[in-house]
Length: 271
Picture 1 (cartoon, rainbow, N blue to C red):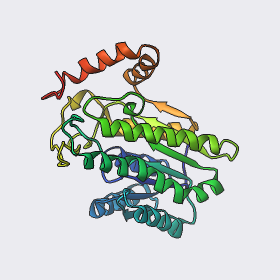
Picture 2: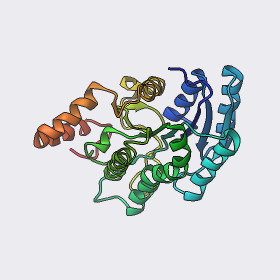
Picture 3: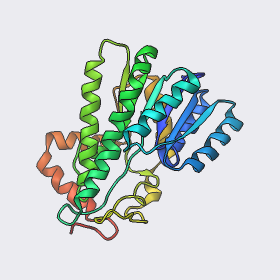
Picture 4: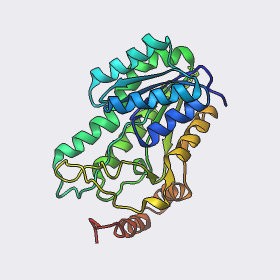
């Protein structure tokens, strides 16, 4: 599907999946509004997209944990383009620490970004999306279906996102608005490097083998195709689909398998 002349708002757009989404939508003819904290990086990305794909791109500095920033992101999109067709709540933060060790501020930080960021942006964009009968997308995770060790805050925030999106979808069932939850598998991105340690500092290194993961570009293509097909849920890997179904059917067995998987991390938290 061509997204020609549609307006797509993407949070967390300065790197990883968000940046790849911006390029994929621009490639398909959409005008893009990119939100993130790294304003200069966003400006570089928007300039490159406009030059390469002859679309309009807008950079807006926004920290999605701040309601006023989310309101301004949406306001700038409407002032510039007059409409919003697609909102992709992609901004996300991860963690790596055992609950017994972690400072509770880390969990609050993750909830503010991953859950409240989605709520804030959706709240302010929804009136326009109702007009366009467009799409609201939450980039979630398998961690939103299955709790992962060392990621209590991350899993909690993604479970919350999934519940919010499901409730919203049901409320909007007869409005023509499309609501999709997209769940990539492990993806090559900056999220594990930027993941918070027990004291709230960034880890600065990945705990997994990045070379065997999906690329952000592959994830972006699947999300764009999923929006075009107006899919309800998009679980992108066989491992992810298996984890969701195994957790429903054989939860005790899945506890053991997840433990074994995360015990194989670099410098594992559980042994």
